[in-house]
Length: 225
Ligand SMILES: Nc1ncnc2c1ncn2[C@@H]1O[C@H](COP(=O)(O)OP(=O)(O)OP(=O)(O)O)[C@@H](O)[C@H]1O
Ligand SMILES: C[C@H](N)[C@H](N)CCCCCC(=O)O
Ligand SMILES: [Mg+2]
Image 1 (cartoon, protein in one colour):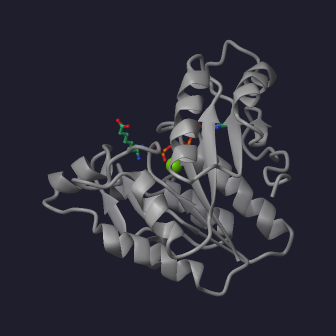
Image 2: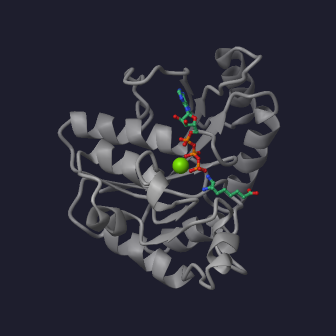
């Protein structure tokens, strides 16, 4: 069993996009894959189709039913805000310990791979005291995991990426790879951005992912694994 935790330098960067492609690539090899999006904000009945959870279910080849939705996304909130704020708007909170054990149990289930998509960026608060980073750290006490850092190629990404990478390394969560998913607005060529990040990444593999059209196949995103 390999466990991937897909995190990012921010929100709307490409975690779900990358995760869906990874799930499809693993399935194409004939492997059994479970993808989870345990915490989701900005979800209403009108936005279920096209949500992170729906896209991951589709990548797994599962129907988007209420039951399947709840099975991979037990904590979802209406407001499109960080989960601590979105939950507070509903008089709720994300139960950190339950979140970690939910993921830990999934890691002990019978799959070849577990992929967990985080929420927003690496330092997004889940509750009053825990960040996504703390979720990853707590989970490493239950299972070995390979963090994947997804970043964009927009102007500004180099500093955002290297900041996230430094924090991850210092916290013992060095990513297995950095996937640079080409941003819609990207004045610098993808390859040049990857080369610059690579120069400072201390050997972490850099995976360029060009802007893809709908339905277009991604290059192998796990060649480094
Ligand atoms: N390489 C790419 N090619 C085409 N579209 C992309 C690419 N990377 C990201 N996108 C698009 O950018 C948008 C944001 O990506 P995505 O939803 O995966 O971000 P995210 O990091 O998962 O955001 P969130 O923090 O909300 O979970 C989506 O519409 C996605 O399809
Ligand atoms: C709703 C959105 N797509 C994300 N899921 C939540 C992003 C929270 C970002 C908070 C922040 O970093 O300022
Ligand atoms: Mg997402």
